[in-house]
Length: 302
Image 1 (tube, rainbow, N blue to C red):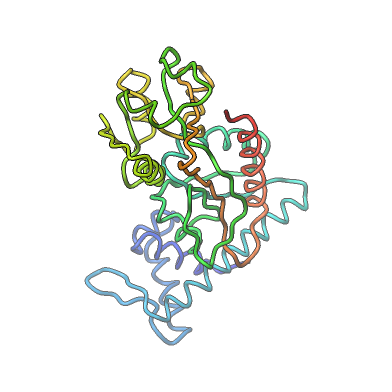
Image 2: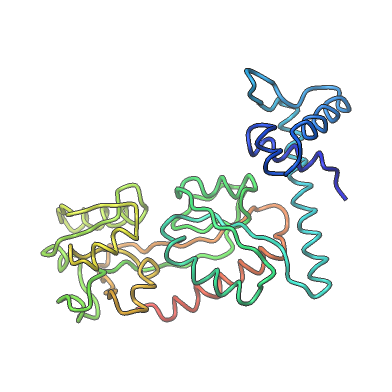
């Protein structure tokens, strides 16, 4: 239904060169180049500035690219609706999230989703929290999932849930027997904390300051996997939220003990999409499944 030039132009911009786009599309570079030259001739102006073998979109190219990507998205959505009309659940959905959520929450969500809708392919891209809104806005992902997302006007919130922070300790640790603890109860133990650039660390530092508590962590990391592994090895205790430690709790490798400090804010987990336009059927199904799964997890979270 759509000329090859639309896909060719989109891939050239994504890959940064005609050669790389041709390799991805499994066609000859000359075929890609000819399509773009023909389109430029039809429009009467260049789409790219060609400088030292590098391609950079002209203002006209930016305008055409926006139309091309909008058309391709609408075409993909149409095909998915046709498949849905034929009682087939097919398509592809891309979710932009953080590395922490990609390693803790997403595996179980994607597995459950794929069991229910085997015809839908799921792509998860992990990005810094500050880059997730932009990825959704420009169409690199249909859904964005992250803590305390700073949403732009071009985005809308599909769901939001607040998650408590707690101490993560080995099963035989003294704090593991408590139903809840205070930040001050954790100070006598070696602390393994999320790195300062993570949103959860900002909440912890604010709570430490309000309680006049000075901390010197034995380790800091942006990697939840590293933090949890150090706790398992007995290097100290961590301060995280229950979603960060889902798998370890399921196999009784670690225990989550909620913090009850009144000045400790919760993390808000936000699921977002573009404000304009309709989600594809695959994205609607994934959004509904994520929302339902989080509601179930929240109900069972200690």
